[in-house]
Length: 114
Image 1 (cartoon, helix red, strand yellow):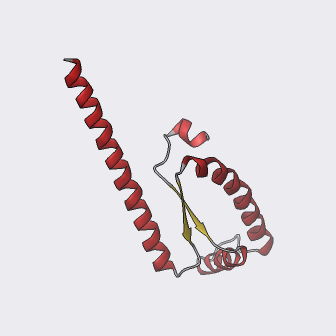
Image 2 (cartoon, one colour):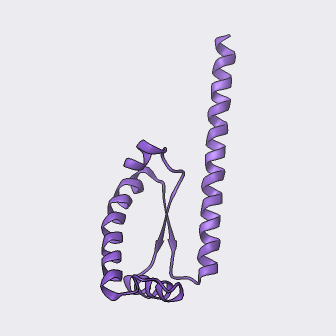
Image 3 (cartoon, rainbow, N blue to C red):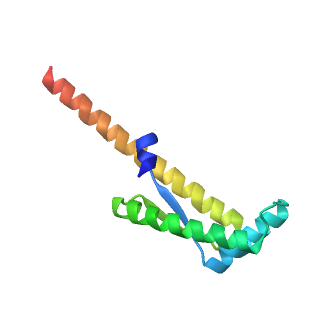
């Protein structure tokens, strides 16, 4: 993916799963509460279509790499926030653990080489 060429491979990719109808309602609610100019049914429909097309490619790319974390996006906002926070914390902890293992391995090899 292009992202890795610019930055690096992500620790995790979090997907909030929810039915299309829930996503529509949330897009509409967000647009109304923020008084957005794009609060129009045809625009929301296009946004969902674009999201679905781009997301499918991403899912197919990251799922086999075991980086995909699927969370229930239907829950109340504070619950979804807690789920996302826990997933990010876990991915960071796993990354720290892997990084530490690599450092130990490199240190061990450097000691054996000298």
